[in-house]
Length: 392
Image (cartoon, rainbow, N blue to C red; front, side, top):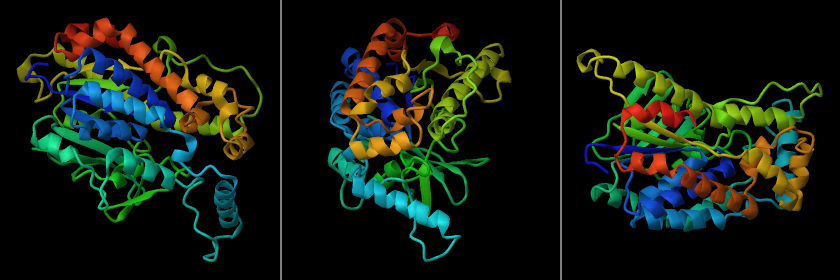
Protein backbone atom coordinates (compact mmCIF):
# COMPACT_ATOMS: atom_id res chain seq x y z
CA UNK A 1 0.00 0.00 0.00
CA UNK A 2 1.34 3.41 -0.90
CA UNK A 3 2.21 5.72 1.95
CA UNK A 4 0.11 8.36 0.21
CA UNK A 5 -3.12 6.39 0.55
CA UNK A 6 -5.03 5.94 3.80
CA UNK A 7 -7.40 3.02 3.33
CA UNK A 8 -10.42 2.88 5.61
CA UNK A 9 -12.43 -0.24 6.33
CA UNK A 10 -16.10 0.51 7.04
CA UNK A 11 -18.12 -2.31 8.59
CA UNK A 12 -21.85 -1.77 8.89
CA UNK A 13 -24.34 -3.58 11.10
CA UNK A 14 -26.55 -6.56 10.61
CA UNK A 15 -26.38 -8.70 13.74
CA UNK A 16 -25.42 -12.27 12.86
CA UNK A 17 -25.06 -11.20 9.23
CA UNK A 18 -21.75 -9.56 10.16
CA UNK A 19 -20.16 -13.01 10.02
CA UNK A 20 -20.10 -12.33 6.28
CA UNK A 21 -17.58 -9.56 6.92
CA UNK A 22 -15.32 -12.00 8.76
CA UNK A 23 -15.26 -14.28 5.73
CA UNK A 24 -14.55 -11.42 3.34
CA UNK A 25 -11.67 -10.22 5.51
CA UNK A 26 -10.33 -13.77 5.82
CA UNK A 27 -9.82 -13.92 2.06
CA UNK A 28 -8.09 -10.53 2.05
CA UNK A 29 -5.85 -11.71 4.88
CA UNK A 30 -4.81 -14.74 2.85
CA UNK A 31 -4.02 -12.69 -0.25
CA UNK A 32 -2.41 -9.64 1.40
CA UNK A 33 -1.26 -10.94 4.81
CA UNK A 34 0.64 -7.77 5.80
CA UNK A 35 -2.06 -5.27 4.80
CA UNK A 36 -3.00 -2.75 7.47
CA UNK A 37 -6.06 -0.55 7.31
CA UNK A 38 -5.24 2.98 8.45
CA UNK A 39 -8.79 3.64 9.63
CA UNK A 40 -11.28 1.14 11.07
CA UNK A 41 -14.95 2.13 11.41
CA UNK A 42 -17.54 -0.17 12.94
CA UNK A 43 -21.24 0.13 13.65
CA UNK A 44 -23.50 -2.36 15.44
CA UNK A 45 -22.10 -5.89 15.04
CA UNK A 46 -19.54 -4.43 12.65
CA UNK A 47 -18.01 -2.77 15.73
CA UNK A 48 -17.01 -6.22 17.03
CA UNK A 49 -15.08 -6.91 13.83
CA UNK A 50 -13.48 -3.45 13.74
CA UNK A 51 -12.29 -3.68 17.35
CA UNK A 52 -10.91 -7.17 16.79
CA UNK A 53 -8.72 -5.92 13.95
CA UNK A 54 -7.74 -2.80 15.88
CA UNK A 55 -6.54 -4.71 18.95
CA UNK A 56 -4.79 -7.59 17.20
CA UNK A 57 -1.00 -7.38 17.41
CA UNK A 58 -0.25 -9.72 14.51
CA UNK A 59 -0.71 -9.51 10.76
CA UNK A 60 -4.03 -9.24 8.95
CA UNK A 61 -3.60 -12.90 8.01
CA UNK A 62 -3.54 -13.87 11.69
CA UNK A 63 -6.17 -11.33 12.75
CA UNK A 64 -8.65 -12.44 10.08
CA UNK A 65 -8.07 -16.10 10.93
CA UNK A 66 -8.79 -15.36 14.58
CA UNK A 67 -11.86 -13.29 13.65
CA UNK A 68 -13.22 -16.18 11.62
CA UNK A 69 -12.71 -18.42 14.66
CA UNK A 70 -14.52 -15.90 16.89
CA UNK A 71 -17.62 -16.07 14.70
CA UNK A 72 -17.40 -19.81 14.08
CA UNK A 73 -17.52 -20.52 17.81
CA UNK A 74 -20.40 -18.13 18.48
CA UNK A 75 -23.77 -19.61 19.51
CA UNK A 76 -27.11 -18.11 20.47
CA UNK A 77 -26.56 -18.71 24.18
CA UNK A 78 -23.24 -16.84 23.98
CA UNK A 79 -25.07 -13.74 22.74
CA UNK A 80 -28.14 -13.70 24.99
CA UNK A 81 -29.90 -15.86 27.55
CA UNK A 82 -32.01 -18.25 25.49
CA UNK A 83 -33.48 -20.39 28.29
CA UNK A 84 -37.23 -20.66 28.80
CA UNK A 85 -36.98 -18.97 32.21
CA UNK A 86 -34.95 -15.99 30.99
CA UNK A 87 -37.07 -15.33 27.89
CA UNK A 88 -40.33 -15.74 29.85
CA UNK A 89 -39.09 -13.31 32.52
CA UNK A 90 -38.16 -10.63 29.96
CA UNK A 91 -41.44 -10.97 28.06
CA UNK A 92 -43.39 -10.83 31.35
CA UNK A 93 -41.60 -7.61 32.30
CA UNK A 94 -42.68 -6.00 29.02
CA UNK A 95 -46.24 -7.23 29.43
CA UNK A 96 -46.50 -5.89 32.99
CA UNK A 97 -45.03 -2.56 31.94
CA UNK A 98 -47.49 -2.16 29.05
CA UNK A 99 -50.47 -3.08 31.23
CA UNK A 100 -49.40 -0.98 34.21
CA UNK A 101 -50.55 2.34 32.78
CA UNK A 102 -47.19 3.89 33.61
CA UNK A 103 -47.16 2.78 37.23
CA UNK A 104 -43.78 3.13 38.94
CA UNK A 105 -44.43 -0.21 40.62
CA UNK A 106 -44.08 -2.06 37.32
CA UNK A 107 -40.65 -3.66 36.70
CA UNK A 108 -38.19 -1.89 34.39
CA UNK A 109 -38.08 -3.37 30.90
CA UNK A 110 -34.80 -2.74 29.09
CA UNK A 111 -34.84 -5.35 26.33
CA UNK A 112 -36.47 -8.54 25.15
CA UNK A 113 -33.33 -10.53 25.94
CA UNK A 114 -30.47 -10.45 28.46
CA UNK A 115 -27.11 -9.83 26.70
CA UNK A 116 -24.80 -10.54 29.64
CA UNK A 117 -23.54 -13.66 27.80
CA UNK A 118 -22.30 -11.44 24.95
CA UNK A 119 -20.44 -9.22 27.40
CA UNK A 120 -18.77 -12.27 28.93
CA UNK A 121 -17.91 -13.69 25.50
CA UNK A 122 -16.37 -10.43 24.26
CA UNK A 123 -14.49 -10.02 27.53
CA UNK A 124 -12.82 -13.38 26.95
CA UNK A 125 -12.20 -12.83 23.25
CA UNK A 126 -10.71 -9.34 23.60
CA UNK A 127 -8.84 -9.90 26.86
CA UNK A 128 -10.78 -6.96 28.26
CA UNK A 129 -9.55 -5.68 31.63
CA UNK A 130 -11.76 -5.00 34.65
CA UNK A 131 -11.89 -1.28 33.82
CA UNK A 132 -13.23 -2.08 30.35
CA UNK A 133 -9.97 -1.28 28.55
CA UNK A 134 -9.20 -3.45 25.54
CA UNK A 135 -5.48 -4.28 25.30
CA UNK A 136 -3.79 -3.86 21.94
CA UNK A 137 -5.63 -0.86 20.50
CA UNK A 138 -3.44 1.81 22.06
CA UNK A 139 -0.30 -0.22 21.34
CA UNK A 140 -1.13 -0.53 17.62
CA UNK A 141 -1.83 3.20 17.39
CA UNK A 142 1.46 4.10 19.11
CA UNK A 143 3.39 1.75 16.80
CA UNK A 144 1.86 3.36 13.73
CA UNK A 145 -0.02 0.22 12.72
CA UNK A 146 -3.34 2.06 13.01
CA UNK A 147 -4.34 5.70 12.71
CA UNK A 148 -7.89 5.63 14.09
CA UNK A 149 -10.62 3.34 15.36
CA UNK A 150 -14.16 4.73 15.22
CA UNK A 151 -17.21 3.11 16.84
CA UNK A 152 -20.66 4.65 16.43
CA UNK A 153 -23.54 4.54 18.92
CA UNK A 154 -26.88 6.33 19.29
CA UNK A 155 -27.45 8.59 22.30
CA UNK A 156 -31.04 7.85 23.35
CA UNK A 157 -31.19 11.00 25.49
CA UNK A 158 -30.32 13.53 22.77
CA UNK A 159 -31.09 11.44 19.69
CA UNK A 160 -27.59 12.10 18.34
CA UNK A 161 -25.39 9.72 16.37
CA UNK A 162 -22.10 9.66 18.30
CA UNK A 163 -18.88 8.37 16.75
CA UNK A 164 -16.27 7.56 19.40
CA UNK A 165 -12.74 8.03 18.03
CA UNK A 166 -9.64 6.36 19.40
CA UNK A 167 -6.53 7.52 17.57
CA UNK A 168 -3.61 9.90 17.12
CA UNK A 169 -3.95 13.41 15.70
CA UNK A 170 -7.71 13.04 15.39
CA UNK A 171 -10.20 15.87 15.66
CA UNK A 172 -13.75 16.04 16.92
CA UNK A 173 -16.67 17.21 14.78
CA UNK A 174 -20.21 18.46 15.20
CA UNK A 175 -22.90 18.15 12.53
CA UNK A 176 -26.70 18.08 12.67
CA UNK A 177 -27.45 15.18 15.02
CA UNK A 178 -23.93 13.79 14.43
CA UNK A 179 -20.88 14.12 16.65
CA UNK A 180 -17.35 12.81 16.65
CA UNK A 181 -15.85 12.55 20.15
CA UNK A 182 -12.31 11.55 21.08
CA UNK A 183 -12.08 8.80 23.70
CA UNK A 184 -10.46 5.48 24.54
CA UNK A 185 -12.63 2.69 23.15
CA UNK A 186 -13.81 0.28 25.84
CA UNK A 187 -16.09 -2.73 26.02
CA UNK A 188 -19.14 -0.57 26.80
CA UNK A 189 -18.75 1.22 23.46
CA UNK A 190 -18.94 -2.12 21.65
CA UNK A 191 -21.90 -3.35 23.69
CA UNK A 192 -23.76 -0.09 23.11
CA UNK A 193 -23.12 -0.10 19.36
CA UNK A 194 -24.51 -3.67 19.19
CA UNK A 195 -27.63 -2.94 21.27
CA UNK A 196 -30.45 -3.59 18.77
CA UNK A 197 -33.33 -1.26 19.72
CA UNK A 198 -35.86 -2.81 22.13
CA UNK A 199 -34.38 -6.28 21.61
CA UNK A 200 -31.02 -5.70 23.37
CA UNK A 201 -30.81 -3.40 26.41
CA UNK A 202 -29.13 0.02 26.06
CA UNK A 203 -25.74 0.58 27.69
CA UNK A 204 -24.66 3.58 29.76
CA UNK A 205 -21.64 5.26 28.16
CA UNK A 206 -20.10 8.31 29.80
CA UNK A 207 -23.26 9.08 31.73
CA UNK A 208 -25.85 8.62 28.95
CA UNK A 209 -27.78 5.63 27.65
CA UNK A 210 -26.64 4.51 24.20
CA UNK A 211 -27.95 1.96 21.75
CA UNK A 212 -27.23 0.61 18.30
CA UNK A 213 -25.17 2.97 16.19
CA UNK A 214 -27.15 2.25 13.04
CA UNK A 215 -30.32 3.92 14.36
CA UNK A 216 -29.28 7.50 13.57
CA UNK A 217 -26.19 7.07 11.39
CA UNK A 218 -27.62 8.04 8.00
CA UNK A 219 -24.15 8.57 6.51
CA UNK A 220 -22.07 5.54 7.59
CA UNK A 221 -19.12 6.56 5.39
CA UNK A 222 -18.77 10.01 6.98
CA UNK A 223 -16.60 8.94 9.97
CA UNK A 224 -13.99 7.49 7.61
CA UNK A 225 -14.02 10.65 5.50
CA UNK A 226 -13.75 12.88 8.57
CA UNK A 227 -10.70 10.85 9.62
CA UNK A 228 -8.94 11.47 6.29
CA UNK A 229 -9.52 8.32 4.24
CA UNK A 230 -8.30 8.35 0.64
CA UNK A 231 -9.92 5.01 -0.14
CA UNK A 232 -12.78 3.17 1.52
CA UNK A 233 -13.56 -0.53 1.50
CA UNK A 234 -17.15 -0.80 2.73
CA UNK A 235 -18.52 -4.28 3.49
CA UNK A 236 -22.30 -4.25 3.60
CA UNK A 237 -24.50 -7.15 4.70
CA UNK A 238 -27.40 -6.00 2.49
CA UNK A 239 -28.33 -8.25 -0.44
CA UNK A 240 -29.13 -6.33 -3.62
CA UNK A 241 -29.42 -8.58 -6.67
CA UNK A 242 -27.89 -6.76 -9.64
CA UNK A 243 -27.65 -3.67 -7.45
CA UNK A 244 -31.41 -3.03 -7.42
CA UNK A 245 -34.24 -3.57 -4.96
CA UNK A 246 -36.64 -6.49 -5.50
CA UNK A 247 -39.92 -5.79 -7.37
CA UNK A 248 -43.07 -4.71 -5.54
CA UNK A 249 -45.03 -7.53 -3.97
CA UNK A 250 -48.47 -8.46 -5.26
CA UNK A 251 -49.44 -10.45 -2.15
CA UNK A 252 -52.49 -9.12 -0.35
CA UNK A 253 -52.03 -10.78 3.04
CA UNK A 254 -51.53 -8.57 6.10
CA UNK A 255 -47.85 -8.54 7.15
CA UNK A 256 -47.05 -10.27 10.47
CA UNK A 257 -44.95 -8.42 13.10
CA UNK A 258 -41.77 -10.22 11.95
CA UNK A 259 -42.25 -8.88 8.41
CA UNK A 260 -42.74 -5.31 9.60
CA UNK A 261 -39.80 -5.58 12.01
CA UNK A 262 -37.60 -6.94 9.23
CA UNK A 263 -38.35 -3.95 7.02
CA UNK A 264 -37.60 -1.58 9.92
CA UNK A 265 -34.33 -3.34 10.71
CA UNK A 266 -33.26 -3.16 7.07
CA UNK A 267 -34.02 0.55 7.01
CA UNK A 268 -32.04 1.14 10.20
CA UNK A 269 -29.03 -1.12 9.73
CA UNK A 270 -28.59 -1.92 6.05
CA UNK A 271 -30.06 0.64 3.64
CA UNK A 272 -28.01 3.66 4.77
CA UNK A 273 -24.76 2.16 3.48
CA UNK A 274 -26.10 1.89 -0.06
CA UNK A 275 -27.61 5.37 0.02
CA UNK A 276 -24.38 6.91 1.29
CA UNK A 277 -22.26 5.00 -1.22
CA UNK A 278 -24.37 6.39 -4.06
CA UNK A 279 -23.90 9.92 -2.73
CA UNK A 280 -20.12 9.49 -2.52
CA UNK A 281 -20.01 8.17 -6.10
CA UNK A 282 -21.95 11.20 -7.36
CA UNK A 283 -19.69 13.63 -5.47
CA UNK A 284 -16.62 11.87 -6.84
CA UNK A 285 -17.86 12.22 -10.40
CA UNK A 286 -18.62 15.89 -9.86
CA UNK A 287 -15.28 16.67 -8.19
CA UNK A 288 -13.26 14.91 -10.87
CA UNK A 289 -14.78 17.26 -13.45
CA UNK A 290 -13.63 20.32 -11.50
CA UNK A 291 -10.11 21.74 -11.39
CA UNK A 292 -8.50 21.23 -7.99
CA UNK A 293 -8.60 24.95 -7.16
CA UNK A 294 -12.40 24.94 -7.55
CA UNK A 295 -13.08 21.99 -5.24
CA UNK A 296 -13.32 24.08 -2.05
CA UNK A 297 -11.03 21.73 -0.16
CA UNK A 298 -13.04 18.64 -1.08
CA UNK A 299 -11.38 15.61 -2.69
CA UNK A 300 -12.52 12.39 -4.37
CA UNK A 301 -12.54 9.30 -2.17
CA UNK A 302 -12.20 6.05 -4.07
CA UNK A 303 -14.77 3.42 -3.09
CA UNK A 304 -15.07 -0.34 -3.18
CA UNK A 305 -18.39 -1.70 -1.93
CA UNK A 306 -18.80 -5.39 -1.12
CA UNK A 307 -22.08 -7.13 -0.39
CA UNK A 308 -23.46 -10.70 -0.23
CA UNK A 309 -24.09 -12.50 -3.50
CA UNK A 310 -26.94 -14.45 -1.87
CA UNK A 311 -29.78 -13.31 0.39
CA UNK A 312 -28.76 -13.80 4.07
CA UNK A 313 -32.44 -13.54 5.03
CA UNK A 314 -33.45 -16.42 2.81
CA UNK A 315 -30.45 -18.40 4.02
CA UNK A 316 -31.50 -17.85 7.66
CA UNK A 317 -34.86 -19.50 6.99
CA UNK A 318 -33.11 -22.77 6.15
CA UNK A 319 -31.44 -22.93 9.57
CA UNK A 320 -34.41 -21.72 11.67
CA UNK A 321 -35.42 -25.24 12.85
CA UNK A 322 -31.99 -25.62 14.53
CA UNK A 323 -32.49 -22.68 16.92
CA UNK A 324 -32.89 -23.37 20.68
CA UNK A 325 -36.48 -24.38 21.42
CA UNK A 326 -37.52 -21.47 23.68
CA UNK A 327 -36.12 -18.83 21.33
CA UNK A 328 -37.63 -20.57 18.30
CA UNK A 329 -41.01 -20.57 20.05
CA UNK A 330 -40.77 -16.82 20.72
CA UNK A 331 -39.67 -15.80 17.23
CA UNK A 332 -42.38 -17.92 15.63
CA UNK A 333 -44.85 -16.10 17.85
CA UNK A 334 -43.84 -12.93 16.00
CA UNK A 335 -44.88 -14.53 12.72
CA UNK A 336 -41.55 -15.56 11.20
CA UNK A 337 -43.23 -18.60 9.64
CA UNK A 338 -45.83 -16.37 7.98
CA UNK A 339 -43.38 -13.72 6.80
CA UNK A 340 -42.31 -13.61 3.15
CA UNK A 341 -38.73 -12.92 4.29
CA UNK A 342 -36.52 -13.86 7.23
CA UNK A 343 -34.67 -10.53 7.52
CA UNK A 344 -35.48 -10.10 11.22
CA UNK A 345 -34.52 -13.68 11.94
CA UNK A 346 -31.21 -13.27 10.10
CA UNK A 347 -30.13 -10.54 12.53
CA UNK A 348 -30.58 -12.86 15.52
CA UNK A 349 -29.58 -16.16 13.90
CA UNK A 350 -26.40 -16.74 15.92
CA UNK A 351 -26.48 -20.40 14.95
CA UNK A 352 -23.11 -22.02 14.10
CA UNK A 353 -24.30 -23.55 10.83
CA UNK A 354 -25.75 -20.24 9.62
CA UNK A 355 -22.70 -18.27 10.74
CA UNK A 356 -20.39 -20.73 8.97
CA UNK A 357 -22.42 -20.43 5.77
CA UNK A 358 -22.07 -16.63 5.88
CA UNK A 359 -18.33 -16.83 6.52
CA UNK A 360 -17.93 -19.14 3.53
CA UNK A 361 -20.05 -16.83 1.39
CA UNK A 362 -17.86 -13.88 2.35
CA UNK A 363 -14.67 -15.72 1.36
CA UNK A 364 -16.23 -16.87 -1.89
CA UNK A 365 -17.51 -13.40 -2.82
CA UNK A 366 -14.12 -11.80 -2.13
CA UNK A 367 -12.40 -14.47 -4.23
CA UNK A 368 -14.77 -13.87 -7.14
CA UNK A 369 -13.98 -10.12 -7.11
CA UNK A 370 -10.27 -10.54 -6.42
CA UNK A 371 -9.23 -9.04 -9.77
CA UNK A 372 -10.78 -5.72 -8.67
CA UNK A 373 -10.38 -6.01 -4.89
CA UNK A 374 -6.66 -6.84 -4.59
CA UNK A 375 -5.36 -4.06 -6.89
CA UNK A 376 -7.63 -1.60 -5.07
CA UNK A 377 -6.14 -2.53 -1.70
CA UNK A 378 -2.59 -2.57 -3.05
CA UNK A 379 -2.96 0.98 -4.34
CA UNK A 380 -2.81 -0.06 -7.99
CA UNK A 381 -6.22 1.38 -8.83
CA UNK A 382 -7.31 4.70 -10.28
CA UNK A 383 -10.50 6.78 -9.96
CA UNK A 384 -11.29 5.87 -13.57
CA UNK A 385 -12.36 2.38 -12.42
CA UNK A 386 -14.75 3.78 -9.81
CA UNK A 387 -18.01 3.53 -11.77
CA UNK A 388 -17.28 0.09 -13.20
CA UNK A 389 -16.41 -1.38 -9.82
CA UNK A 390 -19.37 -0.13 -7.81
CA UNK A 391 -21.89 -1.03 -10.48
CA UNK A 392 -21.66 -4.69 -9.42
